[in-house]
Image 1 (cartoon, rainbow over the protein chains, first blue to last red):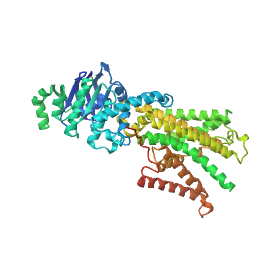
Image 2: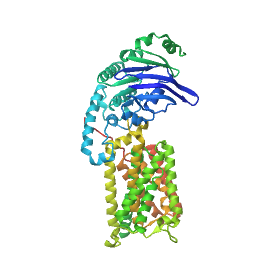
Image 3: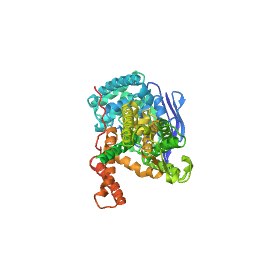
Image 4: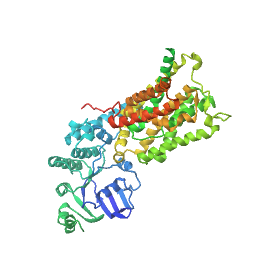
Length: 251
Length: 307
């Protein structure tokens, strides 16, 4: 579904990624791990179009998406969350959710002014969906609260369910469980597995190895901006190169 | 007594015209987060386009008004093409520059308004006709004009309120709050910004057209950058993000601005010094609002959904 070939990216003189290749299969949960500074988030930014790559190829559903803007990539079904949760703070939790929901008619000026019946129909459907998702992560009682008033963990949860509103086929999650309490983490992982069964695909950056082993089919390890290893979570944990990279902080 | 009524009517008309400017700037900054430091350009283009259509092309007022809407709307669209990717501070500076460029063009090129001695350019253009004025006595006409400006102010308020509350407005608000996130959620930020600029530009053009016909005169000195800052004062004091706040701010600032003009009759300071003091006081008002009342007089409406 998503194929990266030999992605390179440097910022000024410092090389962030060199020749990183990766393949995410449809309906899989793929993990992306690596020590801090190994280039995971940079790779996410390149996949989602926020940074331009220097070299390499990005294919999504067999099409080259190199030149598309982030919003066009999102419209094709590729959405992401951010490591430091971004939440429009002076919008309520529900507004956050509805912002992510698709309402093409409602977001056009003519739709707003002349096709209000269609607009409000879609809006109602999105609203139901949003409330269902909020219930799932136990945020429904905060639906009319400003997102800026949520705790860090709650913002994380919000960013997860918000990205689910987009209807994306491939969802990139940047540390979805960081700062979330253990019982909710389990809940979150269950949700992700459920969604995979419904046909969604995930690429997840995660530091928590328990999370990785619990849900990932395949794991890629990055170190110093390079592919270090790939394989099943079990294999990765036995891999000496990976252990060395994580434990010594040096390759 | 009659003088007072005349003054109050004049004040109300100006407040309503500035109210339109405040509403449209609020749509750009309060809702979309676009800090436009050259908002006066739409006012100016509306006023000049309307004047040219009335005086040079001899069109009727509705046609002149429509022309003002179209020209200032297109200008809003055009300036957002090269600037849509700029970060807010750079964007603000570029809008200031655009407004001054347009003003200088009107200042230096008198052929735009049909040419002639002592006409156009720095001299400005006088004798702009007011709509339907031959149906009213000169004493009654301001009341009619007040009705006209009230109609447009109300229509624009309702339109912008409708857009603000819609999914379209929500997307604009999302851009104000988190541009990168909005883009990642599939909102084409550049296109939304262009739409916001075109709509609010077009509607601010209405204010220009109404102003030109009310004053009967337009000249480049009426559209100094200072005008933009007075409108900014209105939305900051009134409360950014709130359409009602913009209207209230327009009222407060315009009343203060116009009524202090007459202070020179009562306290012994020269008129030019008073003008400067007035601006100082508006500046202090902005600072006080930002320090002690960040939300302004009216807070942004929180959208409450029934669950």
